[in-house]
Image 1: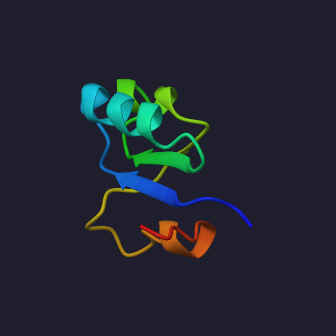
Image 2 (image 1 turned 60 degrees about the vertical axis):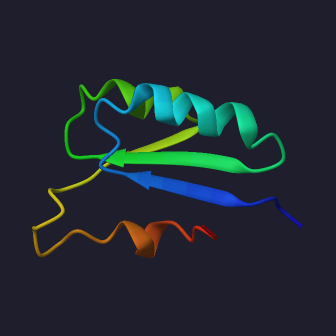
Amino acid sequence: MQGPHLLITSAGRRAKLVEYFVQEFKTGRVSTADCNPLAPALYMTDQHYIVPRIDEVNYRIFERESPLL
């Protein structure tokens, strides 16, 4: 059984927040998603996604990921 999975959407410049979650989720997994490929917080997690803007019709990150939190 896997630990908890946290998906942080619109991660953008929330690097410190993402860092805290990565440090605390020792038994789980943290993923990030953002529409900007230059968003610093994207690259601080095990898995990241570059997605369309949240107000676009084809924004479907939850079909690819199944976060528990």
